Picture 1: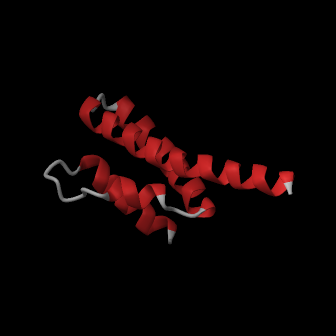
Picture 2: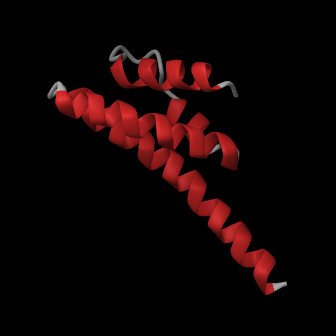
Length: 86
C-alpha cells in the first residue's frame, strides 16, 4: 500500500467519529510486515501531533489503531521464531 494512502486511511480513521471506519482495525491487523512498519511510523507522527494539540479522544483512537498494528507485528515475530526452530 502506498505511503500516502496509508497515511490518509490512518488520519481518517483517527479523526472520523461517525462509524464510517468500523472494521479498520481488522484491516490494520492484517497488514503485511512492510506495511505494518510503515503504519507504525505514520501512527507515531499522528500520535505526537494529537498529543501536541491535546486532542484526547483522537489520541485514544490513534493508540487503539496502533494496538491493532502491533497485534499484527507480534505475528511476524512468531513467524520468525518458528523459522528459527525448524
